[in-house]
Image (cartoon, rainbow, N blue to C red; front, side, top):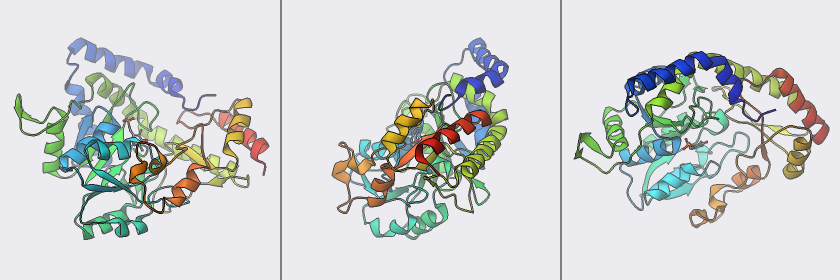
Length: 364
Ligand SMILES: *Cc1c(COP(=O)(O)O)cnc(C)c1O
């Protein structure tokens, strides 16, 4: 059993993916070929955003968003400590200061009620993470940010396709930033990502920053990066898009099935708020004695992973940004979270095997 089954997806889409790739090889426009604008149009429509700017990775999407907002050294960005490193990394790369605000114990997303107390005169942005595929509490986050005139960047690397009050992840705030890393809900065959915004000026800034700050060829209006997404990777995502709604439905069904089958076992399921769904970018549960549980599951042929074993404020590179009182909830959940095999192509038979193995290991 695989943790994320990408081979089954390729088998299902082989002719579309192969012909899309062949078309790029035939026209030869490997950088900014026609597939780039085609994908941007399709993704803007899918999310309901005015603008989509494809970029070279999810990390680059976050970085370019902060650059477009003109983050300066010493500026503070409020974010979650319980996330993949990229979220805090891009803030520090620009000389900014990540201000870690603890998460909710049942969703592992940033606790919106704690944000206002963390705002200072140096705060320049709020960057929530829609962890595991469930959108963070965006209404509350947008409201507190608006009261203080702050932009909001949703790190939607794990939540592409998720819905929040009938709207899509990535289209809920100033910027949405996602990743097409192969194992994300919508993946390419390498690195890729995208930024979404309704703001024309910010979209223009992001487009320029993506190509070395050029407003026209060899006219460098601002400092930028080499952050384009390859035409070939855009072609792969385009080939996958027609199946994506089916994949989302599969993820929802498998997530619900996991939750029904796991109810009653000695583990804790994540809460999913009633006004949103979860696309299960990871299907994560909380268990006691995780190291032993993982080892026993491995013996039974069930792969697991930990997202993430240590919160950012306890990582060597970021501990200088740790709040004085720590982030106790993040620390508690980091010790207990464990992700189970999940992808749109996970079979019910494999899922049954995961559940049976878990039952025998943790008990009911
Ligand atoms: C994957 C991920 C990223 C980074 O995306 P890349 O495409 O790998 O650069 C950022 N934030 C979160 C929460 C992620 O899961």
